[in-house]
Length: 348
Image 1 (cartoon, rainbow, N blue to C red):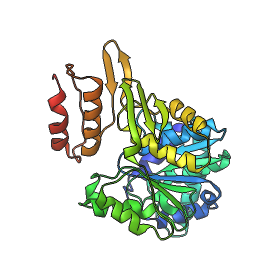
Image 2 (cartoon, rainbow, N blue to C red):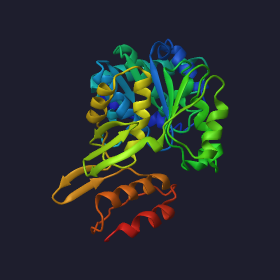
Image 3 (cartoon, rainbow, N blue to C red):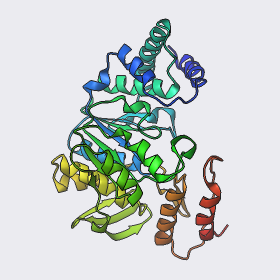
Image 4 (spheres, rainbow, N blue to C red):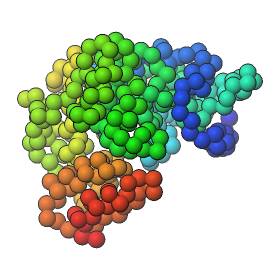
């Protein structure tokens, strides 16, 4: 398979659309030997902060000497960034080899009268095959949308389930209330599995706590977070008395980092190793400084909660300074509410 042939195949599969549910991905992975069950997976769901929290956990595990696979979506800067090992994107020739294997598995399904997997199911299967073939020690698996019926949720025994901040987004698919959305996202919680969560709205917390059959949810304690200093490209803070710093400089990153810290400490890594991992973490388009003269900063805030968090960071970092904004928002988002929050900070 050439790269051009791969693009044609992916375009063809994309016409299937988005179909929530696990039957297709289960059938597909059965054709591929259920290799996902042989991986040590940390499963991450939530509305905002999945990527950043994953970046912090990834960095700590790399600091500890592990080979860490990471599956995220959608791609922002380049197509192959969806599949990474130790921060390196999948190589094109490896991508083609894995895709061809998945394509043949899809064809065997069709021969049996089963449905064609969606493009997200194909790409998720490719991730499992890639990380298994490359002998990853850990895999950070990010939910595509929701949780319970997301293709990533076919895994049965994750190392732990991680739930970042939950707020209103994708309402046309997940529900019109926080309770409905939280219920879908809480679907990644498995029996006898440790669960770590950001501090949540009481409505969300009630759903998560009810979902737990064994044990309790490990929540971040936001009251234990203390800002030391913030400037573009640098954030310093304390969590439970220990100091940390990161180049992911949004105020909201303290909460994402604290969630990663809780997980890493539970995995018995030292505070020094965790601090080194937090400092080394990289994740693009999160209050990322592209230029300092003049300052040019990009951020991927794409819903009301994220815009509120971004606005707070801007107020701290650029108090009373004129700022020009360039903003693009997909029309299925609550863009009118988002604009009311952010435009008062704009010079133009």
